[in-house]
Amino acid sequence: MIVVLLTLFVIALALLLLSLRALSSTGVPVRASSPEAIDAALDLLALRDGERLVDLGCGFGRALRAAHRRADVECLGIELNPFAAAGAWVLRSRRTRVRWGDFRHADLKEFQAVFCYLMPRFLERNADWLEKALAPGTRVAAVDFPVPGWTPETVRLVGPLRQPIRLYVIGRHRHPPPESQGL
Image (cartoon, rainbow, N blue to C red; front, top):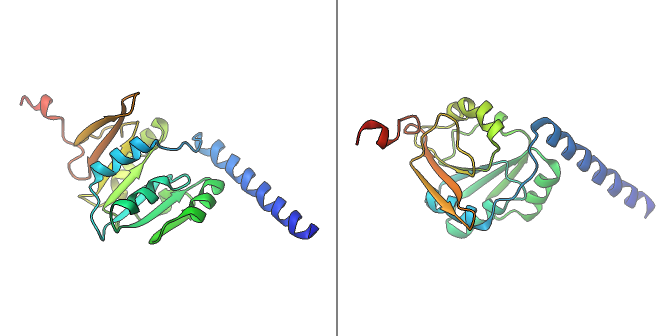
């Protein structure tokens, strides 16, 4: 019994240390999206049966589970924080995979929809990488923060704080907004 408890303690300590390492390397804590933000993002993504959705920085997987309530989609959640990734894996829905690691090492071309709640500093440093990693036509729902240099198709404000949810479509995300075209 002591060996089992000691093993569980070592595993918990390792998860905690790796979680702190993820926080120190990214500067980004695990921060859950509000239910209103998830609903608005999924509305904008307009998921259809058979599509694939990836959640970049999935935390405990709330957006992935909500996506399954809307459509028969295949989901992948990628999370750098091992504690959150383990939680997402335990709570995952059917047809959902959860991967622990840096999503910048994943092949994202197979996904039609992307959900992300990423911090401004990270988005600024990785906007070009994200653009190259996604296929034309991929729909990207970004919670709270804009992707620098990208023009959203639409912005929806949700909740009492009017939290912005932006929808981008790769291939149409670099055009100037209509008001700047003299329309």
